[in-house]
Length: 302
Length: 262
Image (cartoon, rainbow over the protein chains, first blue to last red):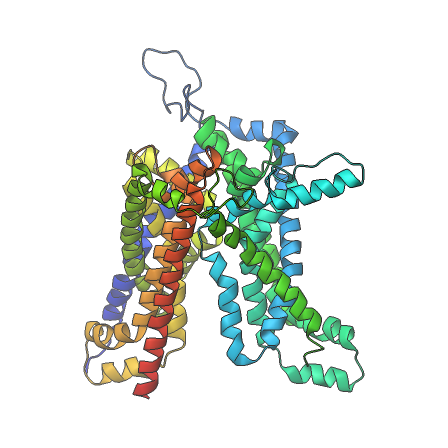
């Protein structure tokens, strides 16, 4: 019989956990630290970064470390407004997803067992197609020549109103965001609703609760942990999304993600891009811990 | 029962329609004999012919395949190790590092890796940087799948192997690995799909070298929308559909083998 010594246990732990730990330290932790460091540097004259030390043949200029990028972030309310707008879009997307996901998740959870897996698969299936294609599909549907746009504009004309463009609008951005993130809401909701004991609803009915009362007083409170985890799974990625506004939005529909993208691939102001990324990280962390706290509170007092 | 669920069924049908109509439109327009995605003119395979004579697009597809295969290989090995380690030992740092890249917006990982590759490694961005980046975010997904599988298993199997004199390596090779194999395969397929599909992280770590599929599609959508995009999209949908079917087969095969064993 083999004996486990503390030493051999430590060795086994190091052998299984070590390689992924090392990989993630190098390619996740260090890059994050580099980003923080970058936020305290000066931008280079032609993009990128200025050297830390001044070249020998040059007088002291903008070299070394600075908090200038942070000062710039707080000097203009433009950036705060974009953050606020991103929160607004994330909130609207989350609510729209919740509204659409809840009935479907409830139906799946209350269907016969043998149909459930198929119904869940039908939710995941479109989600497995390429992300850009799902966004692009809406560019076709909302485009000026699409059937939907023509019907909408005929109706508007009948009412004596100006024709409207559906594409490149906040509406298009919202639709795209909802479309891309909907499964993230449906799946956790379903996982939660599936576990509910039907006897609870029967008991509520026996005690005289009507349909809506049974929903509001029994099903909804019990489903709150699912609501919160689904909301976090939608809210957080929406907050950093740039591709959807990029493809479906107009020039005024930019969000934090678009600002960050421009700093790295457009104007190439790395320090300011890093500041924006750090602010986004802080926003994500506070949203995540807030939802975790709410979910715990909801779980404690059903 | 039916009557009580009537409005639920209605709402659910609307959501399913919302999920499927856009994709159906893309597929239909890939066969449409018109430059515009507006009206149905007639059936054609023209856009598929255009696609298959588009050398850049084919090269991009090949590159994406290489990236997805390499990244899913790396992520499956490292993610399986991470899943095992997290399940078996009480670790604090590793779980946080494994799951954080899954939970945060992709753009943050893309940007920090861009800075890291250019500043610290002095690496010219290209296929290698994309492979590393994809491996980084796929590890977490593999680890989640592996851990879920391990959580559902009977620990006494491993203890029995050890009691019968198997070394740690033998226990892993002949007991643990065969048992978690379906999860390893599922993790590999998941990483492959995530890598082929990924746009955001690829966008930041690709540099200006070789064409890569999602970037090529993005350029087509942004710059010159032709129904060739619809044709690529349709083919990609077929590919993922095929992969899902393979994954489902693997799973049911493993499940039936397990059932037979009991």
